[in-house]
Image: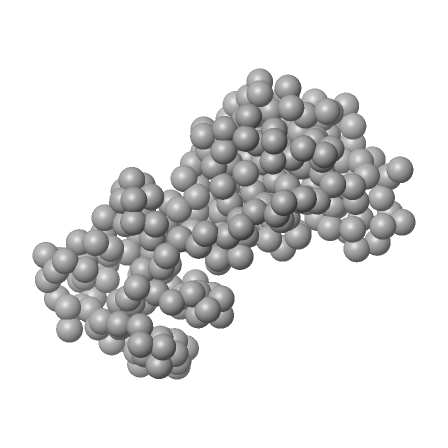
Length: 264
């Protein structure tokens, strides 16, 4: 059992959890908790190694996960509760974590549904949006440089495994413009002149969603052909960024599942 915080593998996990540049250099991040680690196993992603505590090994789901990894020759190390707490980014660790390669997922050559996130700085919002985007059929997520790091531990927890199946790329505005060539580009804005349900989302399209505080920047407005808004009750100024993205993205999904609903 690993009990020392000076252990090299322990120090490595802690560095991945706390430092963006280490994650970027190593092209690895950490998945914590049974459900997230199960997502990695389902996706067929082999961890570099796994840490677990005795209670996690005694749990049915935890034991099944460890057996799966051991069968695949993934190194699994028992650790003390103190080590797990030190390696965890949560207040109440679930007793299992995995060091995973950051997937290098290919972006589509001719995307039909792209989500562009500009200056979204809250990790929980970014993760929730990624989870929603995967469920709504988004084919790629493009992040502007002012957006929070997608490998942030809080983003990973909120995204619930979306990192393993959804291409997420940081690009400058010139590259973003090139990536959505041939797509209609709409910007979600409180003052948008077009109600989101009036847009024909069955066409190749890109949706830009801005951050929580300042919203999208000037370059986002310049790229968009128009702005869409979500009708709200009188006296309500705005929605949470993740909620607004979900409302619009599921309208795109509904239209694509039932094309007759789409606007002309």
